[in-house]
Amino acid sequence: MTAATKTPADTAPLSRSQRLKDVTRDVHDVLDKSIMAGNIFAGREQFARFLRMQYRFHRDIEALYGNTALCALLPNLQERRRLERIASDLSDLGTPLPAPAEGALREQASLAEALGWLYVAEGSNLGGTILYKFASERLGLGQSFGASHLAAHPDGAARHWREFTTALDSVQLTPEQDDEMLLAALAAFRAAQHYVHEEIQ
Image (cartoon, rainbow, N blue to C red; front, side):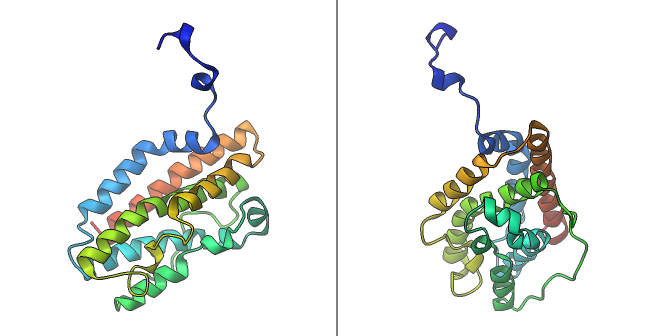
């Protein structure tokens, strides 16, 4: 298509969630490949290592789901928390919780930082539906035992994700805050990658 034939839709600016996807594409891809390279479906013990990695990441962001300001901006945010379900999955597999540790996200995270980390956490639900399928087929795990945190929302993972990104895109941020949010999302992926190296690889 030449410049002369481009439509307004072709030149429309990307939404916030689309920019986040573009900026984090490479680190997201590296993380996905690192997890699968860890053979997390080779056995339940190996899958439990993945659960420990998940627990550590979600422990970092647990406080965000109870943040009043964030809950006002992102509908049903409290219902999206997954830390307790990951803890239950670990218990099902007879695996202890990771020891308490200082999280990768600072306690007094700004609004922009929080949104960047939540974007990463909520986006993982989409890929989680594929992991859930493998956990079920290869390890006999499911919503009632060992893989509850990967089970899709009753409304469907895609719809649940769209509701989140619609709310995220509508939050009023300055250009500086948008940049801060993008950097925070990258930091969240790096933190998850660090936990993969420590728990799985």
